Length: 306
Image (cartoon, rainbow, N blue to C red; front, side):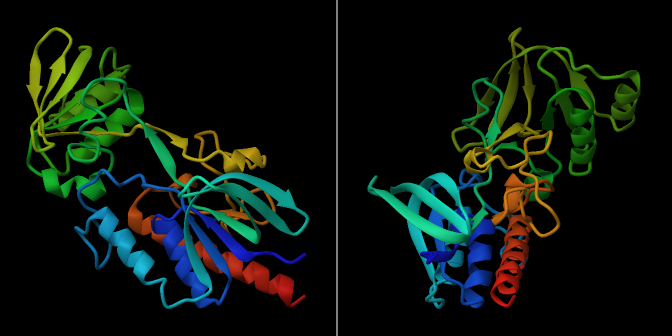
């Protein structure tokens, strides 16, 4: 069967762009489908990205797209992939372009780099301050709020680990649990030893400043806790159901399972970036995309040279 492309990459964030670069240098026919804003779009800057520390997310992605220009076998299309169907030797993808017009393409392999969606608490202020002063990654944002009064939101074992980590950036950390925190005596003792406070009162909202900063946490009883930023590990969901539609295996935490070669349980379907298990950071997503592209290219080469 003649395919339109060797590889369809779905998602044009750090993982997708990095994979497209590697595959372009491998002279593979690639379609990179850009479905819209990335997860880190609300953030003012990307940090801990070697040689690009502090760059704006859109600027980083713009540089990635520019560096694909010298590779004529790579095509970028503003498109939303809505369906994937398995063919005997590849895939058929259907979707809509930027004008809403339907299209269909075929590819020998598919690399998913669609990322995840953060599910924030349904309280006023969380979504509005997300990325500016409501934060998920201390390695990305901890330095910018160092030595400031910080809050950590959550319950149980997870919030304890995050609060202890955040205490390396600030000596003024308070855990807010929005009701019973389900903290063991041992957990409370660990927090106490690091001088981390605990507030279990129900929350009403987060109060921001005009420039996107945080002024305080407001509790349901009307009291306030002045904080400059709040960290949490939000629940995450896959941004795309394409893998699930093909019956690909997911982990118990909802990540898309891949083997050491970035291959899912669906033959020919690869995945990279935040959607697969592991730490989440722009630099790591880019590395994940690069590795997946190398494994994918070597798989195609073995097939061609059999």
